[in-house]
Length: 447
Image 1: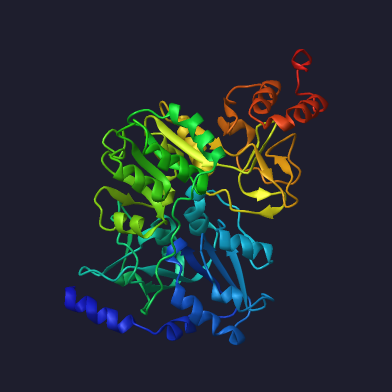
Image 2: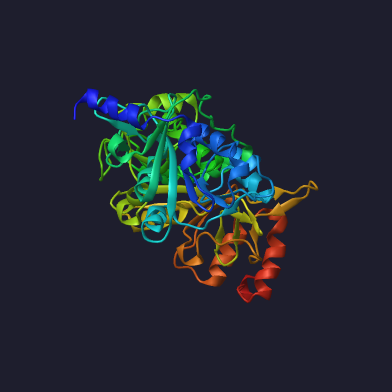
C-alpha cells in the first residue's frame, strides 16, 4: 500500500466527531486513555448525545478537563466517569461525586484490560498521520496502544498540537488498526510548569541530593515535590544523569538544559531518556518532539520492576501524603478522600530496591496546615481509613524537611524512633506517647 492508498483509506474512515460517536450505545464501556491523549472533540460530541444514552461508563486517567460528558450530567444517569489516577481536576470530580477511582498499579494496567476488562469504544488523540500510515500516540503512549488493541471500535482524534515522540515500541497505531478518524481545531495543550519551591521543599531536596551521584538514573514521580527536586539538581555539580521514568515532566528538560542529563552512563537503553507519559510546559512538549534522545514506551515495560532493576544506581523519588509509625505509606488519599492514585510508585519502590546501587525515596513535608490554620503532623501513629499505597515491607528512605531515614530491615520500635526523629518537633512527644501505647517504643528510649 503506497502513500496515495493511505490517503484513500483515511478518506474512507474520516468522520465528523458527531458521526463517529454514533457508534456508542447505552451500557457501553468507553475509554479515553490518558492525559493529553484525552479526546477533546469526541468527548464534546458524545456529551451532546446525552439524552439518547444511558449508563455509558467511561474510563480515563490523569485527564485535565473539563470533561464535557461529566459536566453535562451531574446526576450520572447518562455517563459514569472513572479514573485510574486522579489529576487535580479529577480529584475535584471525586469530591463532587462525579468520578470513581479504579485501584491499579501502572505496569499492570494494560494487562488488566487484556485479561479482565471490556472496551466497547476507545477514543484517543493522536498526531497527524505520517507518510507510512502511522498516527503517533504521543504523550499517552504508556497505556494507549494496549487499550486500543482491546477495543471493539477504535476512534482516533487528530490533534495538531501534540508532539510526535519517538518510541521503542507501541508508540504508534497504523491506519489499518483504526475504525474512524476525526479532525478539528484544538486548544493549546494544558501546561504544568514547575512550581516555585517552598522552604520545606528546598530542605527536603537538600537531604536527598547527596545520595545522587554522577551517572545515576532518575525517576521523578507525579507531583510537585519530585519535579522541584529534579529541577534543583540542575544547579548542582552532579553530571551524566539518566532518565527512566513513568512521567517526563519539566525537571528533565531543566536537567538537559543544564547539561546534566546525558543518559550516556545508563546500563540499560544507554543514550536514551525513557518515559511512558509526558506532560508539562510548552517548552517540554517542544523538547520531546522528534527528539532522538527521548523515547516513549508502554508502562507495562517501562514500569516493570524487572526492567527498572537493570539500571544500576537507579534513584526513585516520589512523594506521599502521610506515613504512620509502622512505615506504611499513604500517597493517594486523605482518610477516605481520593487525592491521586497508586500509579507507578510501588513499581519504582520495588524496582529501585532491586537495582544494583538503587535507592527509593519517598518525600513529604513533616506537617500541613489544616483549614483552621492549625499545624498537623504528616507522620501519624497509625492510619484510620487512609489508603496504604506502599506496605511497610517496602518502605525504604523516608524524607521530610527534618531529615532522612532508611527503614529497611528495621524493627517496629526502630521504625517508630526513626520516623519520630524526622517528624516536626511540635509533634514528637505526642508520637512517642502513641508509640508507647502501641507497644513499639522501647522503654530505654522514653523521654
